[in-house]
Length: 235
Ligand SMILES: *[C@@H]1O[C@H](CO)[C@@H](O)[C@H](O)[C@H]1NC(C)=O
Ligand SMILES: *[C@@H]1O[C@H](CO)[C@@H](O)[C@H](O)[C@H]1NC(C)=O
Image (cartoon, rainbow, N blue to C red; front, side, top):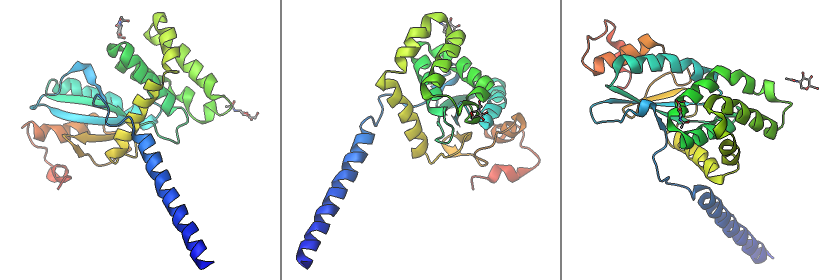
C-alpha cells in the first residue's frame, strides 16, 4: 500500500515537472526576438558616445504620460548626445494596457514615424481607457473604439491594417516580448528609466526637466550642480 502511494506520488511529481517544462517552453517560444525591443525616438541611432535612456512606459498610465514631456524636452535640449528608447510595459492592472501597446506595435510596423505621435495621442486620451471608464464595455468594444480613434490619428488608409493587425498573432507576440523584456530587466512600475544600462531611482514617478539636467549635465562634463548628493545614487 505504502509502495503504491509512493509510486503515485512519483508519477504525479514527474507529470508536474513535465507540465512546468511544457508551459515554460510554450511561453518562451518567441524568445529571443529577431529584433531588440523598443521604439527609438526620432530614429536617432544610438552611438557609443551618446547617453542612452531607456524609458519603460505604459500608454494608459498617468505617470508615464506626465513623464514624457520633460523627457522629450531633455532630449531636444541635449540632442544629439542623448538617445531615448521607449519600451512598453503593459501593466496587468490596467485593463486596456495590452491592447493599447499592441496597437502601438501595429502602427510602428505600418509607419515607424507615426509611433511617437500615436504614443502622445494615447497619453492625451488615456483617461477614456482607464479601468473605471471601460468597466461596462466588452474587450471587443474597447478594441474597436481604439481602432476607430487611432485611424483618425494615423489616417483612413490604415483602418483595415489596424483591424487585421489585432487578429494577427505576430503583433500579440511582439507585445508579449515587450512585457517579457521589461520583466527581464526587473521593471515593475511605469515610468522606469535606465541610463546607460543602470536603473534610475524613483521608479514609478515622473522626473521633471530639472531632474534630467541634474542627472545628465555631470555626465557630459557640464558644470556640476552645487548639491553633489544626487551624483552618487548609483554608488
Ligand atoms: C507616417 O506618419 C507620419 C507621422 O504621423 C506622417 O507624417 C506620414 O505622412 C505617414 N506616412 C504615411 C505613408 O502614411
Ligand atoms: C456601469 O454600469 C453600472 C450598472 O449599470 C452603472 O451603475 C455605472 O455607472 C456604469 N459605469 C459606467 C462608467 O458607465
